[in-house]
Image 1 (cartoon, rainbow, N blue to C red):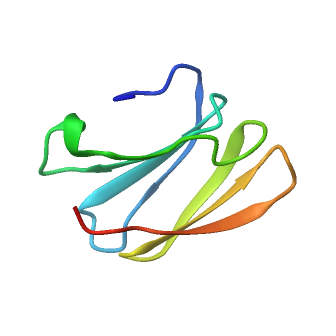
Image 2 (cartoon, rainbow, N blue to C red):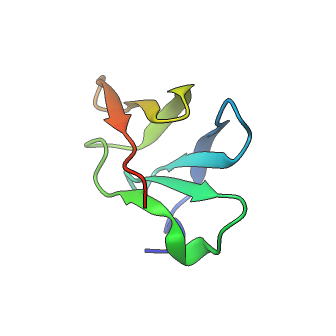
Length: 80
């Protein structure tokens, strides 16, 4: 999946402004590196049981998401 299949509810920029994370009603979080093509994105499918409503980078390697399932989750990003 290159892009979301439902409305985007939230987004967050990484502290160094090289990445943007988006969360959607499709339950996914997608992280794009601004300097790379969309095909190099990181997709977290089914990040929450319902839509994703909050995102924040804690640093350049970790993203926190919150969703309709009343959970807050921490995601460690792997270098590609």
